[in-house]
Amino acid sequence: MTAAVGPSCALPDTPLAGAVPGIMTCVHCGFCLQACPTYLALGDENDSPRGRILLMRSLVEGTLGIDDPDVHTHIDQCLGCRGCETACPSGVPYGHLLEATRATLAMARPLPLVARMVLRVFERPRLLAALLAGARLLRVTRLPRLLARLPGRIGFSMAMLASTEARVTRRPYTQRGSGARGRTAILEGCVMRGLYAETNRATGRTLRANDYDVIDVEGQRCCGALHAHAGDLEGARRLARINVAAFERSGADYIAVNAAGCGAMMKEYGDLLAGDPEWADRAAAVSARVRDASELLADAGPARGAPLPIEVTYDAPCHLLHAQRLVRPPLAVLGAIPGLEIIQLTDSDQCCGAAGIYNLLEPEVSGLVLAPKLANIAATGAELVATGNPGCQMQIGAGMLRTRTGRGTVHPIDLLDASYSRAERSHG
Ligand code: SF4
Ligand code: SF4
Image (cartoon, rainbow, N blue to C red):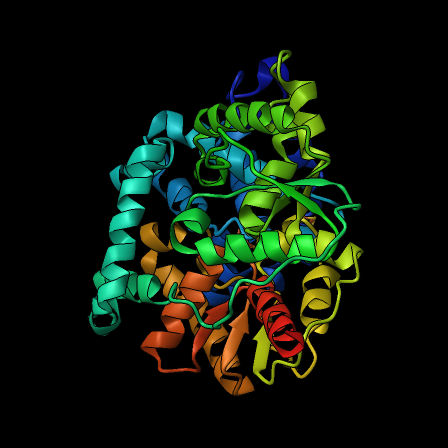
């Protein structure tokens, strides 16, 4: 059977038409099924990678229409975690296929109102900053911690906010690095800047302590990952162009990103803007300089800190493990902390159900995907879960709060920073 391409394609001139070669690489072997959290949670082949690729193929062949409600349901229910990509022996570029499918389906049915509102806010930095400042004020009252017990979306949202409270204490320390490893800009991010500002500062401090010359970059914006994953590719491209221009101006050798989803997006700016002659080469050049912050730290050693006697387990963010294919660097960061007891987490390669704004749009499936993660975390007995992505920190942190499991989540770099802070205090 051959898929329709070009003139015979049922959806010419759509993002999905451009994805046909990728769709055709699927040989329907089913190796991806057990790696798919929605298939495991729902038990429906249409909610598996193989089933969704078949739906995509049916769309380009015209046997299903882009207004088919069942197609929307099963594509909407995909987390975009890309666990199927690392499981696939044929190299199916599932993440790209999903984004192209969502962008094409959005032509028949606009994104839900809540999604459109969230995406628009993330394109307006002042409005976003004001909303996040309000969230920080609310967090200080500790009311979210109380309201986290409420059932449903409100309770879960409050638990997510409460989960962003700092889990480790440290004092800023003097960085003694040489700066010889290169000029390094940090993507400040939206949620990271608004709710995890201390982690951004910790990223700067730990990079400096490991001989990177850290610089500030004006004019940077949201990376566009939420937009791309929801199918708003034009929104993602608008933001990507702004960031490409800002990081070009900086002259940085590296762009350090401490949020896995944002790093995966920025590493794909070259693909996102490949069809734009003015921006394609510039975007590819910026993408080539993007590193997860843990990659830079791991390349430098990283330097060891003072003992931190904490029991911690590590959960791999999907966009670090499956999209960026990074396994070792975050473990190298944790490994540089003497006294840290790292307890292995069963199925740490499985998605937690956060997936950008998925937990807002598909709360029931998100909860089903989160449940086994929480059970596995409880089985470790660890007090903290280290994970390098704000969405995962909030999703898992909210779940832990509501099930009274451990103390919550922390970014691996926060732990390294606390260890460095202790080292300076014990020497000073
Ligand atoms: S996506 Fe890959 S693993 Fe899954 S059925 Fe297709 S070829 Fe097999
Ligand atoms: S991206 Fe994740 S949820 Fe979607 S099909 Fe692949 S493994 Fe399943």
